[in-house]
Image: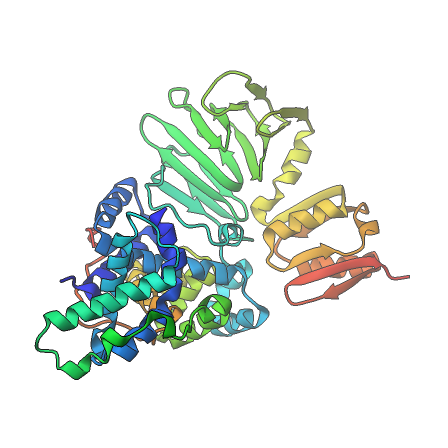
Length: 184
Length: 319
């Protein structure tokens, strides 16, 4: 199934992808958006047929995407796009799968990087196995606080576990209220 | 252009809500709809893969991780008796990829290893969940349907002839009018023990080949066969000791006793010398205090006991 293929074959390549993007795109504040664009294109492209070499496939999608962007956006100074046309997929050094191998250590570091309250919530929920309600009771905070911290923690941990900095992303984003029970 | 930051935030909120207790069928449908958009879907899959990996890491946690967790738990002392880690589901499922489809039941209950919990259902019935148990309940004005997905539970069912109380467990189902009884599910085996009243146990979905059990009745059902026997009610009561965190044994082989303790504790007992497996043990023990039990074996039975971080190894008698 496509979701599974994506989660098992493509997502673990994130450190590799990010390394590729960092080397070939100067404006580093664009990187996470680029990453998601590339994931989307990869996912869509794999609908028809699953590529045999996920790594080469992902990097080809990435490369084509950068080239298209550079061609379309005339404003981008030419040197922002290093020698994109010259990039050979095969010469990219793999940095992958340190992630899979050292999961636990990575997790510990990721947790340690979180702000205290966020970390406590995630640990009680995931390590101690308490329910969200129980976490709220144990910490003496409201359920909505637990949920807000969980949401923050999920994003930061995903970033960290997949090779990023694990910094919290709070800005620019409108959060919905959990209490109303509305759709996010 | 997609606003990836916003999508990721939404995806994280969906995951958070799905992780919570109030997740309903309508929520699941709404999430499915949201996931129809591939931009949403890739963001969701990315966060979900890490969120699930967290389960696995917790299930495999190493002693030093334990230690750091314990340090930080200073303010949370009252949770220590429960000292339990992530759910057994996480440990067994390793990396099972959660189906994004709708779960069947509106209300899900779960306990971690070593945890027991009482749940009151809308019809006045009461359920005690044992260690590492997952149960779903759909109790409305016209039906009472439950699913025991994993683990063990004791049911005190409110009498109501108009709404049969039906519990599905894999390929078996148990139908009740009003009674007190327990069910325990392990791999392909379902054990039903009746303390009071009558229950009917049969293949899921039908009335054929069902057996009825009265007080003292114990049935062990696999997918293809059901064994029925009767035991003194007092012995059934003993087997329900877990409801107050007590394990009661009456001359049970050490092998069985060890298996029982291991259902309640992360620090596992391991028998390294097969000659002691059949040694008979009786008594009442605190389910969560495996160390105390090990010391008893060491001092009372002179067995060689070796304490390691994640396990306690039981060897041959020290001569």
